[in-house]
Image (cartoon, rainbow, N blue to C red; front, side, top):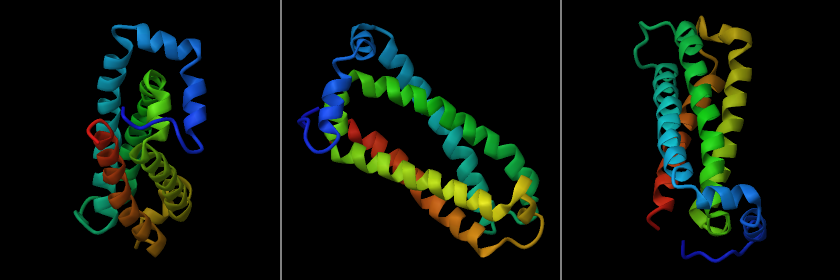
Length: 165
């Protein structure tokens, strides 16, 4: 990476690179490539279900009941997140100073935080066990689905762009 360790998170990245975990990832022949492949698989598990559910909540495929669809797809998306967090951490360990100084990485992390907050707000609006998805959808659920439909692909695009810009 050509971005030097600057800004608020640059020193954190420089410190991370002094840790044994960071050194281990950099020395390993397999840690980064395996983490990268698993990160992409986690992205698929996250994006596919989320985009399908968002489109349903926005009115596509109205014949498919939203509540059972959510009960199927949300755990898959959560599994994607559960894969992406540790694999992303492994990839960060390999080049933390540069990554935490990279504007696209900072943007990605900020958008992930906003997208996860949006998930919480949508779940709150949908109610326990997605009860509100049985009838007409509350406007907050539809708004959240639209925000999600915009944010998650943007997060993925920023993540891919980091390697090239």
